[in-house]
Length: 288
Image (cartoon, helix red, strand yellow):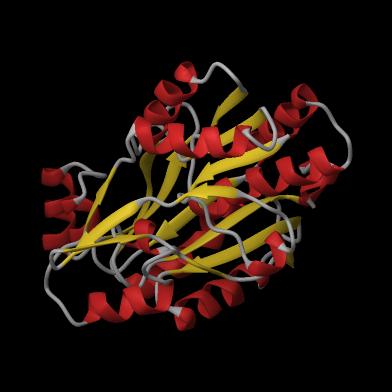
């Protein structure tokens, strides 16, 4: 079985290793130039360009035809395909993939809406890779992915809400008021609908970072052993601060840091820092 995904996930090179993921790159446009995320433009280059322009990047949903072309290419090697996608609550990508899958007559395509994105989506993909490599069947693999989804959580904060407002990912009026008041929210993803949800508000960006372990403490006792991974959008200093304040409260098993991909950074701008976490004891064996 082959794994297909859109590029709405983030995984470190250490996590991917030699494993093959057939990825359809999502597209973004900045200053009139279109790029395939991770192909035509890499993470560091994107954030450097973003710092030099006042233009707002935009993203576009891949067409069913693009997915159909990829499915046909993969099916020529293996007709069994597990197709894993960014939350349908945040992107129309899953619907395009479903339309394409319905047209495939020579392949068995199993579609998964991860109901999340970035590093948390990456955790589900990594769990699927390990499960299939261990000889598990598709139903066992889907159960492993669902367990990862259910026990993990992703939160992030960012210094500038204008990108989320521009991209339509948060209410324009609500986001505008927050920006005018200087409020820095901690944002999560609601697993019921796969959309962003506002968790905590802080007055400064640094305080928002420091509030993340306090939010986590409402779920876990101090000293709980957690699997953890930080990600950032051109802000390694912020990610180091987040690691420091989280590991002061919990027993953290850190996965390699992530740089947020260009197509995701197009909706957040520079500066975002985030954390994916889950109780280590609750994670399936193929996801630790």
